[in-house]
Image: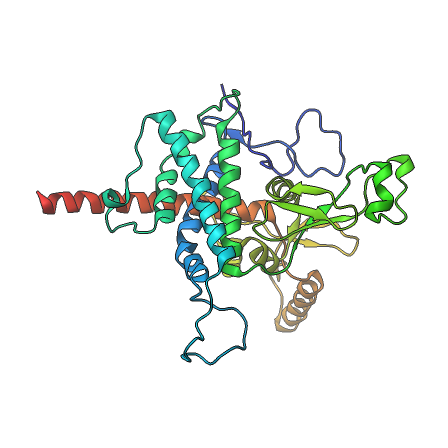
Length: 366
C-alpha cells in the first residue's frame, strides 16, 4: 500500500492534508513514499549529506590538526613556534561525528547481519575512517527507508536526522564557528515564578503568554537558547521545522545559494534549462508584485508585424517591465528537490563507476 513520506518537513507546495484549515498554508501534504516509508527526495538528500561529510573530512581534520589558521595576525609563516596549536574543539567534534555515524553503521550491520570492513580490509581506496563509514552508510540508505525501529516507527526518521546533524556539524568545523544562527521565535510558556529571575521584562506571565524572544544556536551545538527566557531547543528538530517552513517561500538565487550551499550558477541554469518532456524550465521562476503577491515569471514578447520604430518602443517597454519586476525568485523547496535529484544521480553514476573499476581490477588480477 502506498503511503506518505514520514520524514519531518517533507511536503509538496500547494498540496494540503485533508484537515488543513490554514489559509496561509502553502502546502502540508508530504510526498508519496513509493518504497518503504520515505520518498526519493528525502533519500537523495541523505545520500548527498553523506557525500558532503566524506568530502569535508580532510579539511575538517586539517582544522583539528592546527594546519589551518583563520583570520590574520600572529607570528610570520615559517617562524619557529608559529604553527597554530591543535584545535581541541574541532577534534572533539570530529570524534563525536565519527562516533554518531559508526553507531548508526553498527546498528544497521547488526540488524542485517553484515560486517563493516576494517582499516586493513578497505585498502587504500578510502583511507579516512569517516569517509569509509559514510561510503558504507550510503549503500544502506535504500534498506533504511524500508526498516522499522524498536517501537514500530520508521527507522529512517532517526537515521536521516542523525546524518543531517553530522553534516551540519562538520560544515561548522570547516567554515568556523562564525555567528550564532537564528532558530526562530521562542514561544515557550515560562513558569510565572521564573520570569523575574530570567529577565523577561514586559512579558505578562500571569496570562501565560508565549515568550516573545528569539532562539539562537551556535553551528554544531546540540541546542539553541532563547535570549529572553533561556529556554533551550534541540537544534536539529528546530532546523528541520524551519527548513519545512522556508521551503514554501520564494527567495533570490543568491540567498538560497548562501543558505543551502547550492551553486548559484547551477540554480540559474535550472531556471533557463528547458525540459524536453514538458517544454518548461526545470526550475520555475516567480516575481513579487508591489502588493506582495507572488506571480509566475513569464517572458514578455515583442509581437509580430511591428516596424523598426514600433519594435524599439516595445523593446524599451519590455526592459522597463523586467526592471520593475526585480530579480527572479524561486521556491526553496523546488531548488532543494532539484539539488537532491542531482545528488542521487551523481551517487548512481559514482556507484556504476566503482563497479566498473572493481570489475576491471578483478579481470586484471585474474
